[in-house]
Image (cartoon, rainbow over all chains, first blue to last red; front, side, top):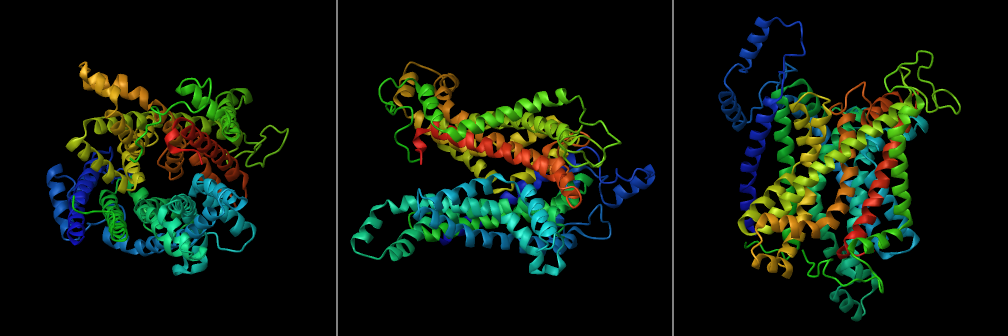
Length: 308
Length: 301
């Protein structure tokens, strides 16, 4: 197990290296440059700017310089927000995005698991159909529709909750963004739990437990639920990727000062260093979360052999 | 892949007179009223999307200075209202649906071709090739795919529709590749493939003539499920300002405009959002039903 964890951990740097290289090539291959938007810029000034940021050098030299800087934990200066470094920009926004993402994941688990269990235990009845119908809707509705819609109803209509803003993490301001982000996850997890629990309930060891005369509650909670939770654990990896991309929309809709806008803005402005920094940080987050999910899965499920 | 009995090897289950594979599938599908209704709604929306703009006689980018931001009204000139610039919201939305549908279909085709070829080659080759190809899929799976799309869309001119569907399609093939690979693994060991190999059928001919026809059910089902995904990608990108660009409408940028105006003009958000949700919902209902009908292995619950 430990050897497996070490090997998986060792695979992260090469994967990240491939991602960085691909992103570097693609971003630089895009037409236009970071200083094109300022049209009044005289050619001489532009050339000076490019020299100052090392953009006049050959592609490979820039690439090696960038890798060296990254290895030292330096993301370089932002080409758009010239007074700030990419590191500082990301450090500013990341706490917001992380709070939002973690809150959404927790809400998704806290709601999705019980709803899935409930639906499975009432299989084929009204509760089941109701929950599964809502789940289809939750999966289909994109967050850029639910977000504005919830803001319209609960913010502008009923005036229960603020429509946008952050206010230093005031939980009141987090309710709508977190609900928007977690809705599809709740739906997916509920479906996952329902089908895996139904499958587990068919197995022999459950019948054996029932035959031994254990109470229904005990059979479900102690015997059936743990194995039924496994698919959810392995879904947590993709779920992180979903939260990361979903936060782009949710931060835009609710005007949260997270990191999501940096990626989009950076890509539009050709702010090379900012885009690269975002790709690295978010790549690292998803890779680690995937690894964590896989390790927890291996730890929970004795059937997973790590010999191969 | 647990399925030891492949759907096609299973005996007909429809009782007497059960026809071929597609006939059976159609019979199973016809029992699902909801899916048929959803299919009808899609057909209706598509019809309106392609005929509507011509019938109303208003262009998607023509401005009506006498009707700025008017709410929906029955019997009026703009029966779903207008936006801030006096452009007819019905025409714009319907035109946006058309763009979304076309991009969704083309992107699905792109992702389907990549996914089917990739999965088939991996599953049929087996061994180290398979290992390598599927590991690549795993790595791509673990990345936030929209990052890749965002970076790809900035590669070329913003708003180029061709770039948009190629970029979206190039990222959405992973699930299809996995499913096709699993089925190919089973098929590759089937007796008829063995028999074909014995008579000397080469790998390319084998894949095209023997494997692809047997995968067609799966491919059709997942193609239908891929379309709403692709429409969603497209609207997402347009919502963020990276996809279809003004003055061309798309469901995504209409929703973005609407969200900005919702305080004073909620209909600007609700009209395009409503079309998008109905479209996505119908596609996923039809897709689920098709999967159940064409892929008996999955079982119908």
